[in-house]
Length: 342
Image 1: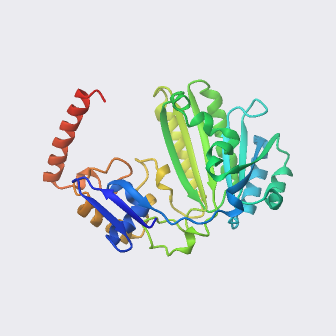
Image 2: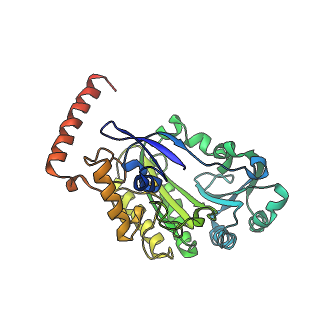
């Protein structure tokens, strides 16, 4: 991002860039939702490799291949080549009619050059395989065997509208932890058939460009702490057994953290749980990071209007006058929304 125009809670529009509001510009790249509403942003873009064409291969494996699958992923991703991304998806009903693991490999280059990253998965006998070439803007709808075409719709979302996410970053996949997780994932999907759905999305990206910048260049804290992003979810129709489900998800997150190779919870902010995770897990453990963010919060959003998601300043930390003023405004807003039938 080169620059951004931001609407603050007090109605002011400010511009942030390397030349204007440099501290705010630092904060917006990694914690931006805490400060305002983006009206306009300018990005530096670069020519696409291979004319923007990506070779995509989906594999499905039965669960007896868990160990072999993650051994291959670890081997390919140490380090991850800049042309490759790998995604792991759990499918309740795969090509065999039962639970499977979907491995999605995206290669930013010609098909012939992708063989070193495809053949290791071929060697462990997938029960289903599909390959295609897609432009970059078609990737969300072509990957995961087109699963986003089902999930990312109002109808797909409404099937199980209550969502509960947990996540953690890991340095590499711990294979016994993966075995334990997928066994539990299979069992819970069977136990709650028709009432809840347990999902998994693990993401492994190349990060050469991310790591070219200094660790303190922006508010994003995990340039060297996010080799793999692990996200798990339970979605359900009603809150029956909600506490049991949440306990299981939390236990899985604890196991990911224990075997992560980082020794603590580090996670991508969009995947944060919101109640169990400390702000340091989202914004960085170095004390100066949260100190800087909180100082900027007092300057640009002192009343906490943009505390709705993963805040690093809780409402209790606002002074009494600000809390009272904000509460009164919120009450008026709720009345207006009710009258407007929004």
